[in-house]
Length: 130
Image (cartoon, rainbow, N blue to C red; front, side, top):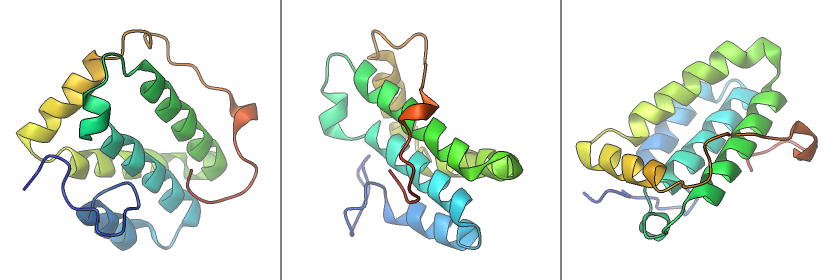
């Protein structure tokens, strides 16, 4: 097993995470979308291309923006379900000590992302994962 794992469909996150999302969130498209966005953002943080960057701030800020958009699109009625979904996706994505270490390395390489801001007016107006 590698830190990155298997993404047989090249969707941006591992097959085991996809299975979790399908099993748990297929009945709520807004929550499913937020889970998929989280899965892509989390997976990005443990890919070799990102881990080799001297400064991951841009990737961190882009993840914050896309996550904020997905949560906003899900709406207030789904916020608890979105939080639960993101937490489950996090737990599944970082399910080994090696993956957690990679995540830590990625986070520590964010030199200019101490204040994580986002702009909801920059969110796409259509549905679907970002």
